[in-house]
Length: 508
Ligand SMILES: [Zn+2]
Ligand SMILES: [Zn+2]
Image (tube, rainbow, N blue to C red):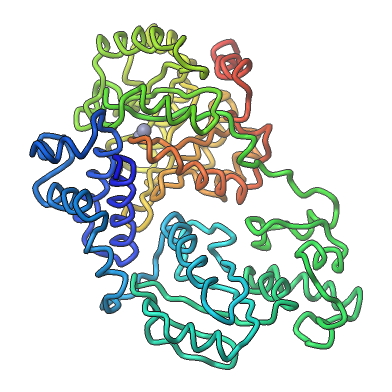
């Protein structure tokens, strides 16, 4: 059991508790402990053996006991209990995409091992990467339907399983509703496509196919004749360029596919580096070195360290002296890594719209993000003015999490989005897609508006621990749903160009 294994198990417990809609503070305790263990410089086993766990920031008495249990047994009884326990009284109908993705990535291979089942794939809103989903829809190819149904009925984590012909409904021990669509291997792809949806998208494409070819994808005879092996084949029948799941919302993608105007949306491989992360210099748990090492493992070409500014006391924002010290320190580390460490700040947008550091300091940093962290309940006029004034600052390159929403907890604050987009375009300020699982801010639709307004976008994790750097997949999915192409995203510029791109605004 290494630190990383212990951290992962605690993190998994946090995710399972979140799926079940358990107490927020309990979830946070597990998450904090996971991050603390991941950031620890010494072997967790020694710390535990010497009874020093509670001296580590982020680990209280309850979690210290859980960590000891993991080290001693290699397991966490809580997790095993949750896996087979009765379903919670209330089913969670508001599941974050991040939770749905990790949950399904664990469940699918387990179901695939059952007798009579050939393959299982996630469909529905999860496959389209919608920001929240109500449950999981799985398409299941079976070799023996009776055997498969029996195996699924006997699967201990699936409760209240009922069948209507080939469609099953159940609730997982983690409190998630699951729909199972059984089919033969030959009809797997067309069913996967249909269940992926969206309903409107599927309806329109099917109507096109019917009109052009006479085939009906709902009819077994048509399917038998067509032998559809890939989703691309379906679009070809409709005389359309292939459309990826994230775009299937009937937001104009069918018309675009028809006229050859589908976007070449950004891919994970295009992403070169994160421009917004925190370290233990402010409210992050990992050191600069740990963040950089993880970014290097991810193959990034650069990473910007953007800790909080002095006014954000609750997040231990850096005084100007500490900021200067951090900048020097980063410069001293530079040669040790085959990755460019960019200096930066996430500066508060203060009540009057000024930015929480003098211009001459901002001018020296590689990356300046300005964000609202206070006064969420101010009037629309006031909040809009604060953000727009911050964008007038020539050194502010990016507005962080521009609408301030927290999924399931806090609505976006009241801003005049049109005005914010207008000023962003006029000043050459980028907007951020923040990849924190409960932010995803700006969202897909605003990202699309930004694209149309010619505003650059930057996709960042806002990671407060090295574990959170992996959240980038979420921000990328938002960007894809927002039709963003590689050239519209700052983080796709290579190391040699990123600084020049970031400095463009100052030189205007
Ligand atoms: Zn922030
Ligand atoms: Zn941040």
